Image (cartoon, rainbow over all chains, first blue to last red; front, side):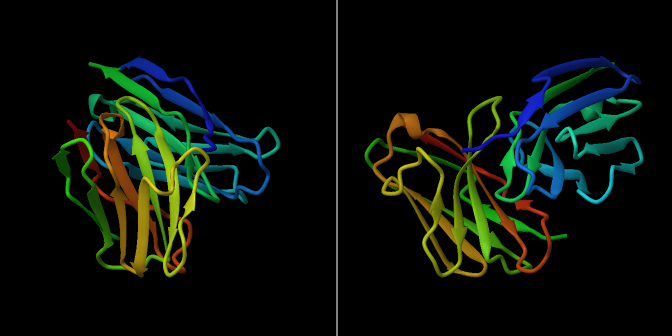
Length: 108
Length: 116
C-alpha cells in the first residue's frame, strides 16, 4: 500500500517537554490530514485533524500544522505527560493510507 | 460518537482452516469500510477497501482469493482469511467512514489472529 513518510519512528521526551512528529506526502489531491493515537493492543483514536484550507489547528495541548507548499504536516504536543506515551500515526485522504508511525515515550 | 464493532477480538485457529472477522457500524451507515493489517510495532497497512454492494478494491500484493471481503449491507463488512497459515498471524483492524459524513474514520477494536 501507499504509506505516508513519517518521522521520527521513535521519540523520547521528558515530562513537560514538547514533542513534534512530521509527515510528508507526495500527491496534491489530499485535502484532509488526521492524526491518530494508538495505545498497545487498542484501536487508533482520532486526536486532531486539519483540512487543506487552513494552516494550523489547536486543541488544548495538541496542535497540527500544515504546509501545503512543502507537502508536510506536523503534530505538536506541548507539556507532555506520561499518558501521552503511545504510537502516533498520521494519515492522508483519499484512501486513508497511514504513516509509518511514531512511538512516543514520555519519561516521568 | 460513531461506534464500530469488530468480532472476534481474538482467534486461534489451525493451519488450513478459514477464519471470518466481522466489522459492524452500530449507529451509522458506512458505504465504505477499510481493512488493515498491523504487525507488532508497525504501521497499519491498508489491505483493501470494501464498498457496499460491489467488489472490494485490494491493495497491491494482497491476495484476493486468500482475503475474501464481503460488504453486503451498509453496516456490515466481513473479512475471511481462507486456508490460514502461520504467516497470516497478525492484528487485523477494520474502519468505517460514515456515508455522507465527511472524512472521519472510525475504527473497530481489532482482531488478533494466531494460526498454529
